Length: 260
Length: 138
Picture (cartoon, rainbow over the protein chains, first blue to last red):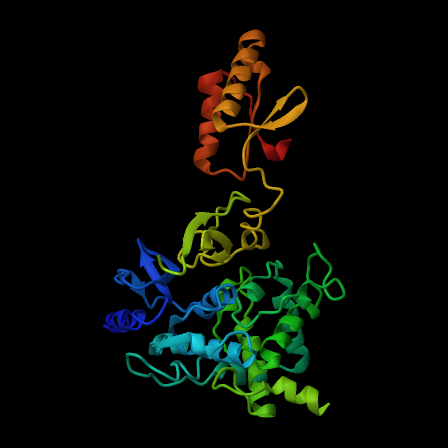
């Protein structure tokens, strides 16, 4: 079993670390967990997709001297690399214990890269082409696409969950909370400002790794991963950039700013 | 002692009757924030803005740390035993003097089903009044 192999890798790695962030399962409850040296690892599970990079980021922000491991899928490894590209954490403090996703999950996520750069155990499955993007662009005119997003965004209850759960949303002050764009305590949210701010500040800046955490957290079932995937596709064709694939000196948005 | 203690506690949101599952993160004994509970049967990993911020009050400086009892018009910190003793003697006194129906009990959507059951039980079986209502009708 893949999980057994990962448990044994975690056991070994824990000897040189302060802890390892992973998912734990007890009595049907799945929670993020920090395993420390000597802990019983029988509760460790690979679980569903989950933004563990967010948990690691928030711990390291407060305790930057720790050396931590993380049991990570491909998207979570990419989230950590992209956080490092944005100087939000130092990868020197992080040991990735990577594992590949199942073919089923890869299909569900429409994920082109369902495995991390470094794999501690398991076999890679093939990436999936996101057919939804082509279908969406082909089947709908510009006006229809606008109407589609208008309908989707009208469902929003303004929980800010998509922002709060995002491993790459790290700004101290969030533009989605600024009165200039978004009036406090009012629904519906301004169209399209509210969702476009989020989209541009994550996917549009080349930060979105496509982990689906935003969509999983959305009480209104807004297809955010589709919106961000469309933007990521544009970033790829315009700048040749995919978030979190590797450490880079500067993410593309800084190059644009410098070139004017 | 490990240099870090991080834990996640599953609990129920205290803001309304829906009862969404919360994962409250604690780092070195201090509440860090809330994550949605993916495996929770009610909320299935989704929360509203109140749930996302349900732990904000925990470390707030305005938060009461002990019960307060009014002595000569001034609120003074008290123990739970002192506060409950006072409430209980006042309620029994009023019920004896003016009858149980001179008292009313207001329950709350912020409480669990079980807590609301206990409140009406206290009203009906202990005090002896059917004056039970809900805070939303105040």
